[in-house]
Length: 277
Ligand code: G1P
Image 1 (cartoon, rainbow, N blue to C red):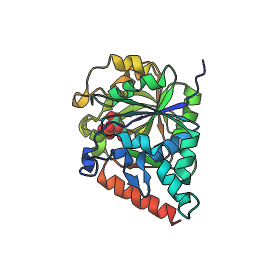
Image 2: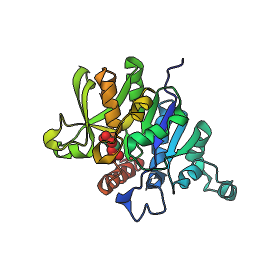
Image 3: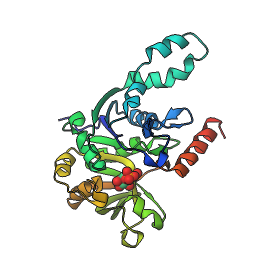
């Protein structure tokens, strides 16, 4: 069986309440940093890592995502041959290089549940997961490309981690483990959003995962955890008990675009980058 990672799953069913009223009729994944929606940054990161099949778990009110990754016949016809045509070059490139498939999460039962909903699109092969809220950038290889390299070596689930201030552990899944290479840890414990006093470390999981397909069976048996939701962190802990989860301290920057502060920081960062500052 071909064990290469070819597919990337995007859980994109969440409400984006922190961005209301903007997210009332617009999916939060479609909020733009400069001129590009968050989810397109994620798709481009996946493409750069060599993944060409994008599996998107959507929900009610998310149809704009499907339209975005499709041609807009009328618009394209209108601007064809004009000075504005170049505005569509990048998204056209993305659309021609990838295949997109969609399924809907009917009930919001947590990230673990959203990932389980994606099983029908993924099947029995390892896959990447991108949470588009976490916008990442790196001068060289993107975060997913770096993680694929780690996967090739260890052939088990990989989570991206970053050190966060201890008072912020209650916003993240937090890991503990033994450092087996520089910045690479064999995970021994993981806790979803612990209070700082209960956090095993300050090493937080950010929204990039490579998961082996046995995660689906584990998720099917995973009970609701923190916040009454089915947590991917709890399912990963089952794999970690068998030494099958690696945490990787990625190179690059990460912006929490699920918060207004992080969104503004990302906007300023990409604006300066575009201006060559
Ligand atoms: C989710 C995960 C959490 C992880 C975070 C990364 O939380 O449950 O473990 O640290 O994504 O962004 P959410 O931000 O969806 O509440």
